[in-house]
Length: 139
Image (cartoon, rainbow, N blue to C red; front, side):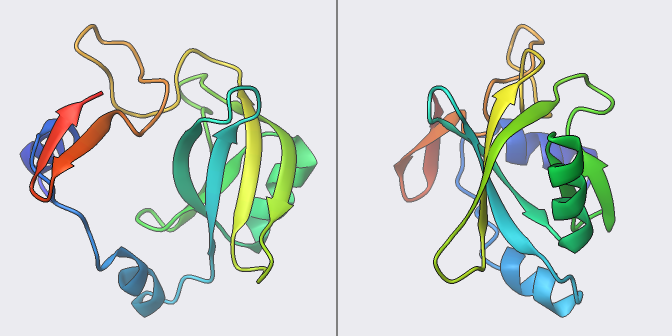
């Protein structure tokens, strides 16, 4: 994906869901589980990431969200460069033990790597609403 494609994907108003994402992760051999990151105070879902065993261990040790980047193939401590770290309040596991829920508190001003029209980091990665099968609107 080029930079212009990324801008269109992140700022555009057409639905372009990557229905092959999970299959790509599997084909690449990543051993990960999905992680839902949820604000511990508001219950708002902030974003979805992935964790491998090392990321989970680092999260539990630091009490700050550490995830595994399937695109960069490396651990990343959320907010290490931006300052928008996420303090982990609680880690939950689902019934089938194939996904995690990190209940977190924001230590910075935002969460998403994208910014709004004023240049501020967005407070969640869910900043658009699907209005019909092919269109989006900013929330």
